[in-house]
Image (cartoon, rainbow, N blue to C red; front, top):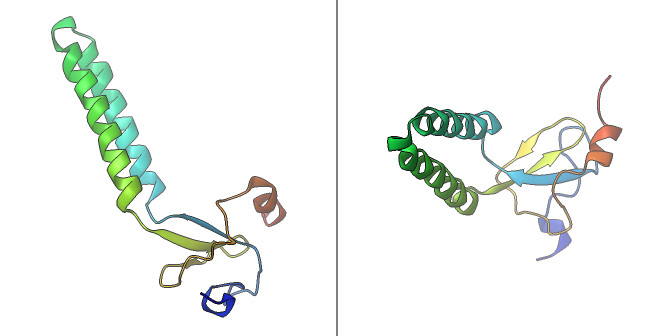
Amino acid sequence: MEDSQYLIICPKCGCRDLFIRKDFPQKLGLAIVVLAAVAFLVLAAWRSSFYLGAIVLIAATIIDAILYVIVPKITVCYRCRAEFRDVPINPKHEGFELAIGEKYRTP
């Protein structure tokens, strides 16, 4: 593909710093992890149901792996945090880099 087919500049704010990430709500991911951890702790409290707690953790790991494979990537602007779903992923863009993110962090 030519460079003209990829998003190079944010159309909303003109920023040239863009990154890619998975298009999955972080709060939902955190909720899955917390629920699995709480379920494990409750089930592991009794020796007779410890194995069920382990199964819960294994199931959460499998769900996470499946979601990682099937959830698409999106392009995000560092400055305005605009998300672009319907554009091809530019191979020059990488995941979020803290040093670049700090440059655009508002005090």
